[in-house]
Length: 358
Image 1 (tube, rainbow, N blue to C red):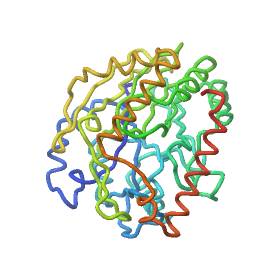
Image 2: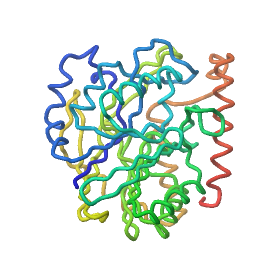
Image 3: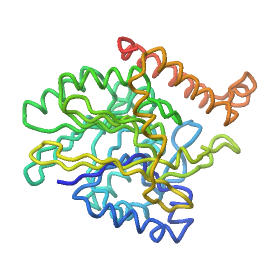
Image 4: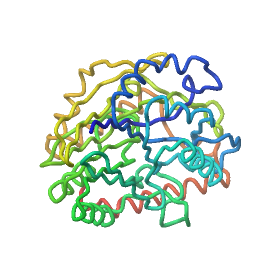
């Protein structure tokens, strides 16, 4: 069984079929490559909906038109994770439209309402579970909302699911939406958490949310890919803050495909296919920095933390990101206050949960 894992997908900007009639042509080469796989799995970062009004206060809202579901089929994407911080950007109605379109096009999904996806193909039995970390500051986590909700990373729940799947003869795939955006180095506590899981269980972990590539490591029989970066993504103008958009540079346009060959629930081959997006075209292209991302995972705690802090500072400086008092005053309204309090709550839950790994 040949399976490919992709990073973040949102058919926005130059990938929006309503704005660009050349999307299929631009994606032709990478689509042909992906169609050589039995299964392609991705993180669907945005709802697929034609609803025009966003449902919550955020800096950036993501959505793609109902036309874009055909692009998932074109790219041979048969399975998607939905547990992320944007899937409810257009409310429950936008989410339900997404589910309807996925079902209609026979695209499987997981990560909502603790939904696990079981795949039996050839001599393989695979269980997919998706989780959105509180570090991603999502909306409608399980603890705060009735169904539908995004499944949060709860350490005990993740371990219980891994144990149950192992006892039932399933190979586990964990889809983690976690980390800090635009930093090529995962949080130290995430590294320690993933490694602690790998000491007791066998699984494939693929991460997303940072929108840049991060390192990969093999621990015992487990594969840990901290962030695959963007697969299909582009800059988006904010609908709530005038003039704001998520800026993308070459780092955001450089990512990779995690390619695995699995036989009888055993990983027989692993390869990383590095890709680069330019003007809406995705091509296979080497990444000379990637080896460094992997090597830094083995630095001492202090060395690693200092390097990560330095890189985060460089990003904030280069993008002129500063939240001073005037920045808050300009945005002071009920929606902003609710979003601010939600962020504080999510951060508090996250710190309590991961404190022992820091």
